[in-house]
Image 1 (cartoon, rainbow, N blue to C red):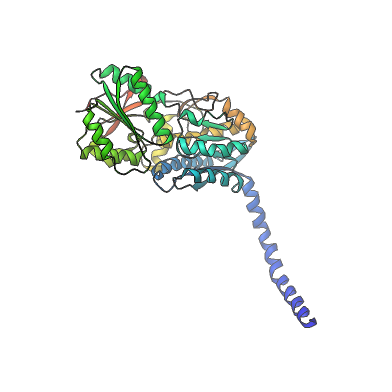
Image 2: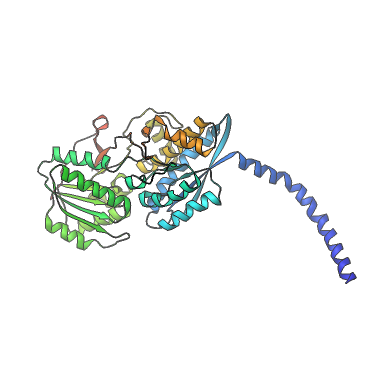
Length: 411
């Protein structure tokens, strides 16, 4: 026993001679790392970086990254006279809503983020907002327009998209005024919170203007064969076909429409045609498709914040990504800019103070006028309506940024 104890003592002393100098040598590095962490504001971003919604997630990531890069180039966010750098922590929830909820929990409780960007789309944003509300973490949803996201009485959730009827009512007005021969409407919607909600608003908008909705059906998430629904629509000979979903859904639908030689004087798709990727994927099939979005590079706002004007934002985006930004990327960027403005006005990272600054915000940014309503959803924008003409998006509403007139297709 004594021999074993002596050997243990010798081993312990030898280890001490080796380890203690190493700990002493590394201590400054540990200290610097900890100090550096205190100089950083962490923003959590749960995104569907893999799975069916990955194309949309990439757009959000591009918008967030551009904002973070510009802020850090400028020295960081001014927090009560102290500049703090920005770090964005991404978690992939694989296009699965229950995992989006888990990702929000992880970001708040394990990754210790200060603030949160909401999950993609209305359904996941609504589900995950219960977590951020529970912990009192200010959250900005950059891709959630459905009123059902904001009807929970939450205080910490804000959204940069106006309600869905701010897209459907202008569309219906334009069709009614400029295509009076259009009478019969067919609607096919993805059975998911945002695509279904905006389809329902389109139905209301059409009926309110005396149009006859002859078809309204839903398709399941991840559906790959729409031949049955499209055959029914073709047989009804509608004047206006409305399809809702995300970009992969709408590219597939447009190709299957072409296979069945289905057309109408007006074809509307929300929200895929706002993306250049939709035009690239469908080619000539994109021609004359109408849509609407919450922002377009054609808008011309002179705003406050890190980006300033719309023109400057577009310039910075093109320099970084070599492409034109669309509403999804711009909304992500403005979400970061709004956090920055709120933090700087609060002069603090205190979540309640930052939340209060967001709630009373009344400014103009490159995105447009920013004012959040009582539910936290923005109510100050006039979203553009556009049509794809000659392979490009042409704004046909509102008048202030109008680039062309509505063109009718062939039935």
